[in-house]
Length: 325
Image 1: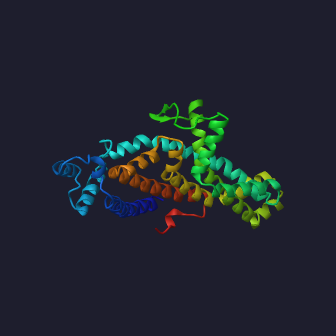
Image 2: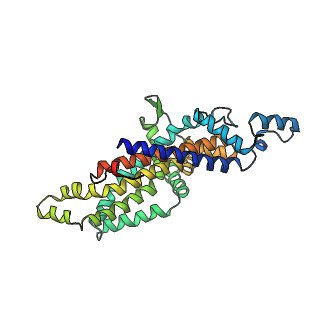
Image 3: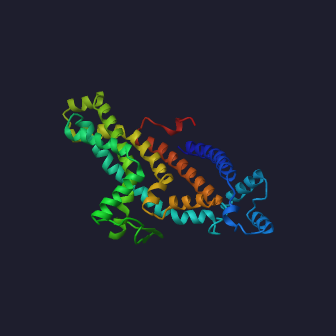
């Protein structure tokens, strides 16, 4: 396993280098942040001084190599809008996004797997058909519309939950979290459910398909012939064997939730990385945009490595030492 991890880390360095080039060129070749940063009434000398101060007077290739050199030292540049290190600015917002993503993925697991099993074990029942019909809505409804409907129903009409913001936070190991207080949980429920809805539907359909396929396998028929209880058959023989595709999807969707929580954070005014990146795009704050995208790349690489390791734990037939690449 150690050889596999070392090999994967070396591959990750190549991926990071290629992605840094694509991200840098894609972001720095578009627009001119000087138009946002300096007053239209400024004279040419002021413009030239500002351009030189941000290093925008250098050729693009030279800016890229300077960016890579600084990034290796942990410096992703300074925000044009906030005049603070871009990476520090993102890390300050990361706990809010991570909390939202973790609660959303927990909702996906807690609701998606049991409902998917129920629909898979009783596909012709009313409950099974209802679950599948509702899961189609989870795929079809746009996230921003669901968020607005949740606010209108639960915040405006019923008044049960707050419509926006993160609410009070409590320090947990030095990290501010909101789920430790009742008011913080009330602020967290709607945006987390809105973010989890698509993933709940996805896990339901994956679990249902896997359960129906597993029930036809010989090992399940043999377990029934041995007289094992239905609970043991489902919990040990069915669920364990359908977990690999579910774990893969949940892990990759966790990365997607972090990367694409922008819509939910905007609708619910959640102070996370998504809202920060929207503001940065509006002001062409290039260092923050590049730092955010590179951080997302690192998160996806780490998640893929964790998934590969979990494969060997869930399925003894998978041996990472024999895995090529």
